[in-house]
Image (cartoon, rainbow, N blue to C red; front, side, top):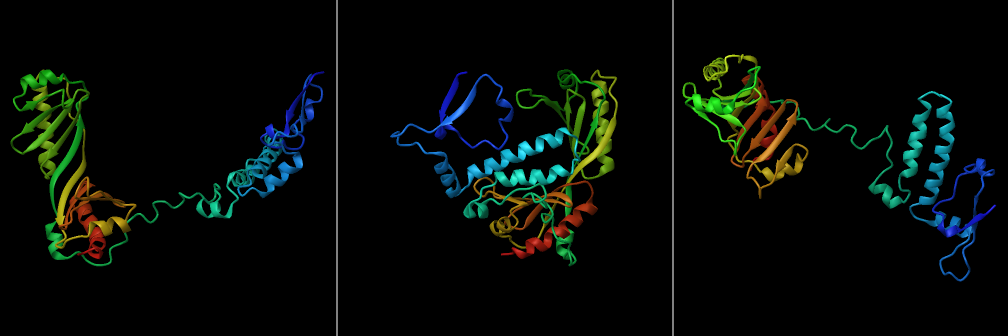
Length: 317
């Protein structure tokens, strides 16, 4: 039988014990031979072990431990052992892959399923509970100025036909893929898509907005779509504005609340501040003006302003 000779330096890692136990009956075998003398880069097996032990990252030892754990774990998984026994092995596998250098450990600690770096993310991203009442001048400045609702027509719409037959309809497929219908009284703008999905935005009176949505449906019916229906109406967002009454240091606010605040003065002069409870988006200006969006009624908007006011007072300039 022909034998294949390879230098030890060409082998990347040492194989675990019992790795090639069943290969004795094969027609060919791999025999490790020392590298040629005078090559300048050859080392014997003892030298490899010594170099691997002195390596700062300990890659050879970690790979050896990983191979041994895998070879020891495979038979137990085939035998149908309990699933809980593999959690400890998984921790050891992840620990073997982590760097062993003290400097690297401080920069990137060992990972394990029980201690992931993202655990608890979002726990402290919410605003604290307000302890003081909202000042009267701030409470009176909170006013809603727009409400957005959506509904469905339950059929497809020919946008060109609607544009030709409805007087206040606008359609430019190069700019937007929907028809814009503007109502005079109340002042409401509707977007009608070819799929039948519609969005209306305008007045903050919910009853008037719903009546305007029904007017849009009637206009589409008169344009030749008699099968359209008014269904699935829902208010999705209400936009409001408020004034804090003092200027705000947006740079300091974004530096402390970096998980919530997005402030790029070179792109936009305002600061976008988002919270998860309640799920609100604040648009802050340096002059103390605040725009609130994401809620559906004035009660929740007043509560959102009450939560953000103590935070902004801290960065008063």
